[in-house]
Image 1 (cartoon, rainbow, N blue to C red):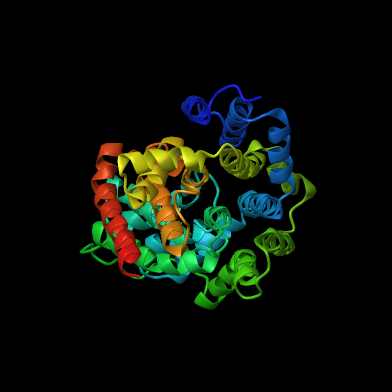
Image 2: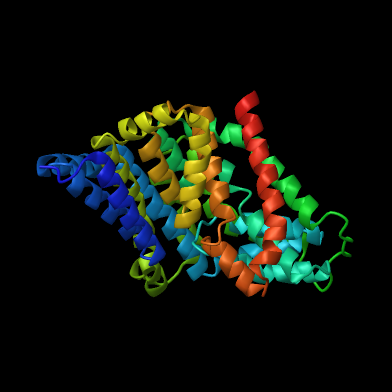
Amino acid sequence: MAFVDPLTAIVVSFCFLGVMIYKRVNLGITLNAAALLLALLALDLPEIGNVIVETTTSLPTISLVVATFGIMLLSLLYKETNVIDTLSESLSRIIKNSKLTVSLLPAVIGLLPVPGGALMSAPLVETETEKLGLKEDKKTYINLWFRHTIFPVYPVSQLLILTATLTGVTLASIILRQIPVVISMVIVGYLVSLWKTPKTKEKENVKASTGLELKRFGITFSPILTTIIAVVVFDIDVSIAAFIGVAVLLLIAKPNFKIFMKPLKGWAIWGITLATFGAFLLRNVAEAIGISQVFGSLVANGNVDVIFLVIIIPSFLSAITGSPSGGIAISVSILTGIVSFTSKSASLLYISSYLGYVVAPTHLCLVLTAEYFKCSLGRLYKYLIPSLIASFATAILVYMLI
């Protein structure tokens, strides 16, 4: 027997969610705990059991949970085997223009979605930006902003896959709509941080030939490239493609057993994998208690524009949780039934959640990058806010015109 009505259950559960986030409890634990609390308050025990069984045995859930685990394993092994260092160094030596180098390095390393991973590119970005004579605020902005330009069109992004799966919209249709946004983000990033900056001379003291560096880059980038090709060209499920990438990396790096096991002994890989399951569990519990009907009536009574909700809810939730996946999971739970998801609305939901996360002070990459370059958040937001506005404007224009 349910203890309270659905609206009260939602309020209590989301307050609990907020407290857990404020206490910085792992997102995997937080999402699952909030989902179970919501279920205990608003559902009967047999209904709770049905929801848990349905979530656990659902093929989309299993696929995405396994994919998340595989992508995280690939990312962490790149770091543990130091292959990421070789990849970064070779790219830096191939490109002779420091402006292009500082734009590409964070984006390439951003293909590995490691929490706080902006620190991996920060030392290399620092070296190149010093050649350009840039101050700490622009160094921080470049490392943060360009790292996050690739994800809206990256086909093996956990966030994109989650969005497509939860909304029932094809991944390709979402990516196509977000190409203009990515172009806008790159242009804005260049204008804000690199425009009118004097070019540096060709890099000196690089003994290795360009051909050798291209070979090094090709080899070290091949695990990521193999994963992308498997998904895009051969239409292999990401849950399988990620482990193909892992296999290629193991062949290249040949790590010993201790190095291979190190990511599996840490909490990071398990926490993010658990968060993916929690996203599905929260959505399914919310659907079971009729959350869309609850919020649908509130929207109807308040004459609130649904598109306004698609923008505000995910951006706000991603900002306060410091997690776009958490923001999207909760937003879909709220909006399912109110919004009929198409490529247009799913893309706008994604971009709203993503941009809200990128500029939020709860964003780990933002905080760590600012700390690394000894830059105050106030100086950083001087560049981030105009960039956010321009990127959001592009997303809204795409929604309205295409």
